[in-house]
Length: 558
Image 1 (cartoon, rainbow, N blue to C red):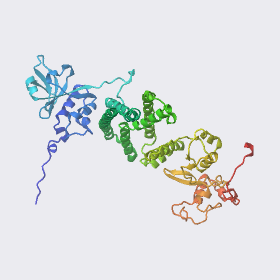
Image 2 (cartoon, one colour):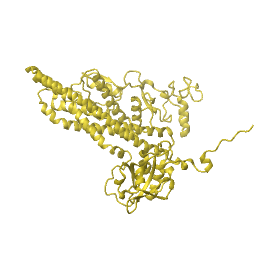
Image 3 (cartoon, one colour):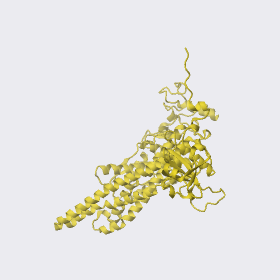
Image 4 (cartoon, rainbow, N blue to C red):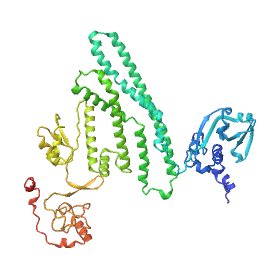
């Protein structure tokens, strides 16, 4: 019994690749156009990584493909008689999803010289009437990019050169309209306070009900305009974000797909995390996160500076006069802080895991930028959390923030005296020593700890800390290779191991390494085993915690 062999595909019969035999008029025209301009490119180089439709190049992708050949292209709808001869050669879209390259006209202007994909580099003469019958009304103009010699000095800033900021600058007109809408929205927000003030000051005392109806209609109109502006602002922000995302995603994916294997990152997970970070940047740039901070800051500036203590005797005209300056300063300040935080996180926290939670972000910031920055981040986060919680509960409160170099020394705590005037309570983010020193200095104010002091330890890895010192007052680290037997040994043995360890682990738990095994291995690596064999006196535990709080006195400093 024999089987009939399956027929070979057309490409196998001809011995040529399928991408070469595939009919793609627009791509073939681009290949010929790049050759005419002296920038020859292959079909594969022009379309690699592009989202082709049914394997063919579309007019919307023509500009991206042309840029790979060093050409700048633009698709326009233009009648044949309005195509300027100085812009030739140009690609013409024909009926039936066909295309050709218009090279020029004869002396009489009645016959066109064309390049068709099917004729390769052979020129075809076609009358104007026949070309008009087949022309679809859409033309694509392309010109080579300007390329300067490397020795040419750069005498001016070239706009849109950067791959990221250039994409944002391309949507400047949209962001300009968004900023104008945001300004109008903030101005319209004054309608309700003005309405309330006029009702109490003029309508109620004079019983001017006609004025009340007019004011109410005006406020309703302003509320409607506000809703429309908010909807338009959201729409345009989403529109600009979609355009930027489309352009940047295409560029990033093209670079990733064209990455040479020798330049491939060692960690694929970190590389993919960096790629996802671009989405965070795009979401931040295309959002309105700056506006809430501007509103809060403007309220604080206007009320605190021009109506101290909530005094109503200040004229409203004065508040309105300074509003534009306050809003401008608020926008600049809050926007600068947001962008600075974003750039700092992008530079220092690439590829770190766990930053999607507040606790993970604090741990990553502390490990990458140091404990000082971590404390500042925690202070700001705590203050913001308290303000949001109290605002949600309908309570009015002021939260003040201040950072001290140390809280365990009285001379540093004195900095808080002018700041704590009139406050009801203090929350300290220091260890237990700092909290007690602040409570000792300010006896009339309750002091709450924001942290729970566990022990004196060190970080083993991100999110894991282990105790390293008990402050026993009789340090022997110089004899034990820098490893404390009091804290690292589960039994706090001082003169050697107990003999119950198994394969370097303590008998109290398989996850607990034997402290003395660590000490012996360390001394062997340092060639200091003679310190292990030396007889040491019994440890005096009278210097430890037993017997009340310990105290150190230096007579030379008193």
